[in-house]
Structure formats: C-alpha cells, structure tokens
Image (cartoon, rainbow, N blue to C red; front, side, top):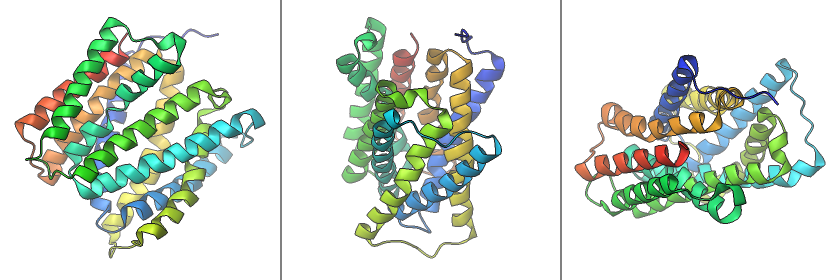
Length: 291
C-alpha cells in the first residue's frame, strides 16, 4: 500500500480553496432560497448534481456498478444525506449563515463521540477530549445566544440535526463495504437517492418556487456543479493523496470563513458571543482532527 504523505504547500492551498468554497456555499444557499422553497431547492440540487456526476463518471470511465455487499451502506448514506440537507436548507431559510455554520460544522464533535462509542480504534485521547469540550462549549454558547444573528430555535435544532446526519454518513462509510468503492460511487449513492427523497418531501412542505430569477438559477447551478461534484470529488482525491488527519484538520476553516462571508456579504449581525462560539468550535475541530 502506498504511504500517504503529509500535506504540502500545494495540498494546503487546495484545502484552503475547498474550505472557502464550502463556506461561500452557505451564503449561496441562503440567497438562492429567495427563489425556491428550501427542501425543493435541495432536491433540485441533487437532481442536477446527479446528472453532472454521471457525465463525469462516463467521461473518466468510472464504473457505475455497485457491489451487492455495499448496497445497504449506499442506501443508508443516501437517506442520511437526504435528511442532512433537508435540515441544513431549512435552517438557512430560518436563521443566519453565521449561526447555522457554527452549529452545522460541529459535525466532528458528533463523529468523535460516535467513534469513541462504536469504533475500538477511535477512542478519545486527552487532546481530542479537550477539543471535544471546547467545540461543545462553542455549540452551547451559540445556541444560548438569542440576541444576535436572527435566532430561531427551529433553525438551530435543524442545523445540529444536519451535523449529526453528516456524522452518520462518515460513520456509515467507514463501517460498511461502501468504503471500498470509488469516491464517485459513494457520492452518486448520496445524490441519486436524495434526489427523489427530497423532491417527494418538498410536496409535504408545499413550497416550490418563490419567483426565481437568473441569480437564483445561477446559485443552484453553482451548488450542483462547483460544490456537490467538483469540490467534493477534489476533497476525496486529496484524501487519497495526503494523510487523513492533515486533510481533516483544515475543516476548522469552513465555519470561520462562513461566518466572515455572512458578515461581509449579507451584512449579518455577529455579536461577541457568536465570535467567541466560533473560536471555541474552530479550536475544538482542530484538536479533534489533528492527532
């Protein structure tokens, strides 16, 4: 097996770029929500993302076949993905990018807790426990601040629920044979299953279009191509090249940049408690991932 190398300057630049794109995407989802209902928007994104990814796999001759042993894992990650983004899009529709980003990017906290309980090789070390405590303190602080950032109890709970589903995807991939399939196959499982699930769920909410303009359609295309496919696939490639802990340690940048983008681009009010919560969560994520 080829030994993976530490993150070098080129890898760091790529990871910083991905973190910035994922953070900017929170703003794009918020703005695009002006033209579509949140769940319907998520469903359309999965439809367009599936179409683009199938073209990518055809162009690069990535096999579509899914081994029988991996089908249950594919179904589970598809359902987790559906609920994750239904919750995330509703959360961004209800409250600010800054609040949602801090709570949603608490995913490593829930993954570390699940790994400690379910995976023998993922016990919490002293450093990871310290990171867990810091990040949880940040989540509690952000959740308890009801004065800034357009607080919404439902939005906050949706953001945390989405983070837990995201952790469920990571855990499912690790413990099922789906981990032995190509990254494109794993992503296709999530997109192809979530597309009909989210579109069907949007019927329950009864909201589809909110007079979309060219800006809203462009936002949907950006999410479907630049984020759902290209950014995720590049991240998987980097994970296959560099050591996993080095790649993961850059995840602390996404909530930091998302709060900054919400503040700079949307003019969101970000009070001292939110900045403090952001610092705690970012430090905690770094300690959890950086062994």
